[in-house]
Image (tube, rainbow, N blue to C red):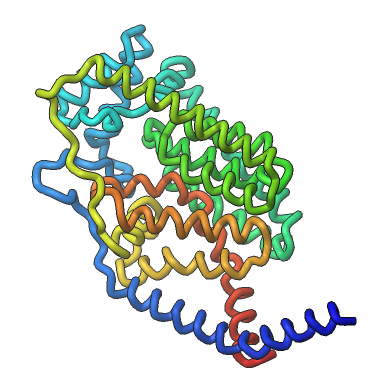
Length: 364
């Protein structure tokens, strides 16, 4: 009886504070959306002299970044050494090669060399179908997911569609984003093997997938699932070792005379977050004052989806959003392709979240 009275007292305190807390969430959400409306979209390079950026929004232009990756893949396919080819081609286009992180991991170039453009296009189709299937199953299993499944899958297809075009398949972020979307859809607490493999593949292509791995490891630790925690920790450790080996190979073919990359720590604020996602998706077609709040609105849906997937999505996308505010130049907007495939799934749950908040604010 004492335990029941204790739980009842805690519930009474929660019920007393819930309307006020819900109202604060509503006000904070409206203020954040208003701030996004006033945020200017950043379109150009961060500084004069920066190399051109691939304009993911312009399908008719084959710019220097895409041409660079095309040529690297072609020469690797002819049997040349990746590190020598990558640094030579970046120098020829006046791209920085220092520090070593300015040279991409070699995985995608080797894949293109082995499979060719047609083979990579077929692989993209297969991965897309697997991702849709994985999310169809996960939405059916998560609380409240089945009723929103059709809309959520449509939003997933739209989120992934901008990058999944033949001309953009040489972009590392496109593949990392698709593989992370697959991993997210496959993951279940306690059932993580296939998700681990998909995340490992993403990490092998682009190091920007690491926060996803660290988040799933942290969430497993919070659940006290030490086996899963260890699995994600091992993956992160193996990746760090592989990255150090990659940097060692780069250091063998560069010198102090090579061009250094401008700083990536730029502190662009909210505009860095919203602009990255806008310019990496179809939202670039909308005026900035409308597109920016639409970037942030899915977070409300993720927060309102009371499920493991909802919590994971909220932490994941807020985390990457904060990273975009702190790091990356304007011409690095395409980094957002790592997370945009799943980003807008949260929109499917926005009406549910709004109703829940409104009812809580009214004390219902």
